[in-house]
Image (cartoon, rainbow, N blue to C red; front, top):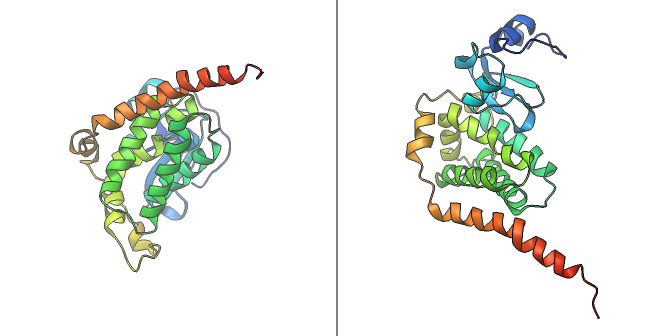
Length: 231
């Protein structure tokens, strides 16, 4: 945007008023594409959400959060797959490593996103990312882990066509370059595809529950036993 910096606005201010009013719109008269709200664990909103009120309840309905209150505004040249990979890389490095779902789950999601960005992805990678996201958010111990998949899930909802094309696009196993590959149009059917087109096998939910029980019951029990002096 033209005017960057720190601002303070009343709760309930419209998203568009912040970006185009206070922020002055997109630099060089580029087209607005998306805004990342709430920091690395937040979610992406599009031009359809510009009339959205910035309050807890309204944002929760869209899958985004206020979080740190940060906004990252993007124009039409931004690739949303790379955005998801960038924020997942941050949350993966910030994971304390205490619980398995966050420690291993974010690592696997980052590996898949990196593979897609490099043009080496497979169609089933989309399913894997959503299954992992569901498992992590359901079983992670802290707020960081529970919200870590939000950037990926929100880009799936808003820009599934982009993710799908980047998965299918392969050229000499090299990184995808050029403005043409960065044009990721919105998909109006993305949300329905996630809700009904991708089926999450029950076995993954069971696996997530077992990991949760291990972190909360089995692991503390063994640590308790190890705390006794030997001999």
